[in-house]
Image 1: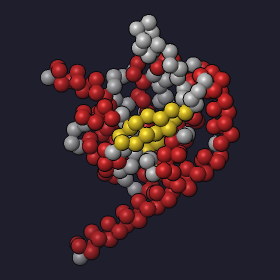
Image 2: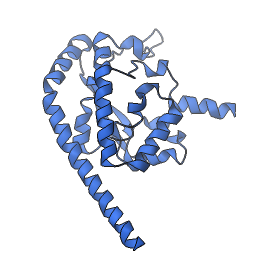
Image 3: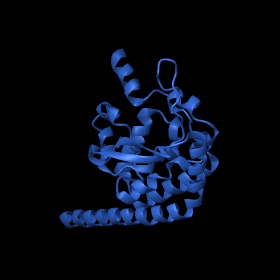
Image 4: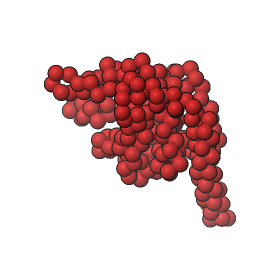
Length: 221
């Protein structure tokens, strides 16, 4: 009987994953259609303030630790200091960029990634490839599911959550995932976007990057 029960759970989980993917496609298309006027206005503002390109792509690590490229609306200039290094994000992000970030409008092009299958609406946020060497074995469980535009860590504080807790929340999501959890996270995300809670224009000014933080920890032990 236990074998049949396990097979039933497997079928149920497989069905939930199929529903999740269908839900991603339907909602991504719907949101893209509804926000098209917003995207057009955002693109015009970025073109006027920052010039071309309007979109930029960035490599991140996706499911099974495979590389993906995500799309975002550009929110920062390419201004550099006298040494030729890029200025901090906070200095390169003007009024338009700050507004786009605060309202998460810059994230909307990632709906294209959802339609392509690179991302899900909900899942662990895809992070930079240079962080790959710094996860412990348990934290690598975050790669067992398709990454998301939003996730459990994001609705618990977005950029204000320290790395250890953020990655622990990613693992908790993978281990406890179900469709109901996704719906709760989506609802919480809408609330956060509308209130602008937890958004940091320059996250690196508030906390170290993951690789730098863990490199310091290793050096101090």
